Image (tube, rainbow, N blue to C red; front, side):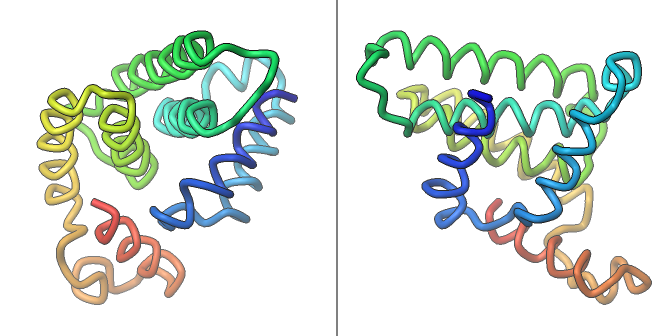
Length: 163
């Protein structure tokens, strides 16, 4: 699976810089997604689909293949980023926020800046910050989400740090 190679590259290269996605949880959700029948897969959380596509885009930016030109790799990465953007639009990321959508938005911002689209990245980061504030990520999770598990609170802290 090409996607598995790109996700491995993402976790090897990007995750150490932005350690906001819990690898085991992500892979459990990812494996569950692929185990679903196609009809159910089509009903999956678009924010999660957007996150996957953004991770694939970043993985493509950092994978080195002797069989692929830099231009072809750039086009493939931009295709994945475009697919992520479409999934986030289906999710209604401008008016709705979730942990997965904000994670995807952090990575889209990083992708855009790394892909020489810094002005687009900075504009997108404005939306990202507003959504993070709307979720209360900037506040102590013990106050905002007192009944959440310790793991969920830690994930909120990591995501805010990445924002």
